[in-house]
Length: 248
Image 1 (cartoon, rainbow, N blue to C red):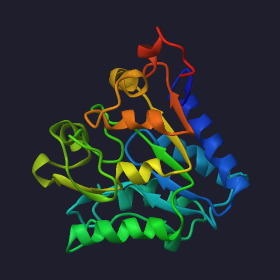
Image 2 (tube, rainbow, N blue to C red; image 1 turned 180 degrees about the vertical axis):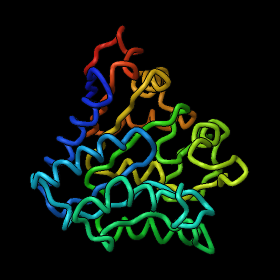
Image 3 (cartoon, rainbow, N blue to C red; image 1 turned 45 degrees about the vertical axis):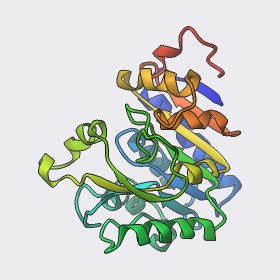
Image 4 (tube, one colour; image 1 turned 90 degrees about the vertical axis):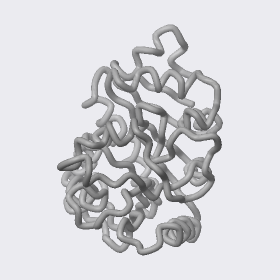
């Protein structure tokens, strides 16, 4: 695990964009796993800049998002379908047919989870998986549990996640309490992983992720076992690592 600490959110976003853009240049048909939430917004802004400067093209890139709320209309303003459209897809030359997000409108979420898992398998898995981390250690919507979920599945969102994400909905009552999420096993099959964390609220869980005991109670701790993972932290998120070797 390579851990890189930078001064602030802007530098974290720029460095992450350099890493992803270099991978796109090396492999124009790269399969990228995408994340949502506030953390990657700056990264997506930087990728858009690089596209507009003609440094990169998304024309052959395949993307698979980690998750989507369930049940939720794909057109809902708080859906990850809309998030990705607004924050990346409509600003670059990616083909919508090459983008994949779990269907929050699916009649049967279990069948949708299986369909999504098979879609990832059909293209040979993810080349580069982008991750954030929740304050409870979740990656994707893989919440703390008694075991690691292997494949895409339906999740009951934890109270901590609901509290953290409630700000994206008009009221708590309208917020879905479940989600369809790519599983830990599928994430771990990714050839490369890039995890971003920003802000003081993430410092404690970041330290547990990197140096703590591997446990499904801290889902992100499993990343200690991945053989090609880069973690980029801003100063606040990395402050808990000051007593440790920064190259974990």
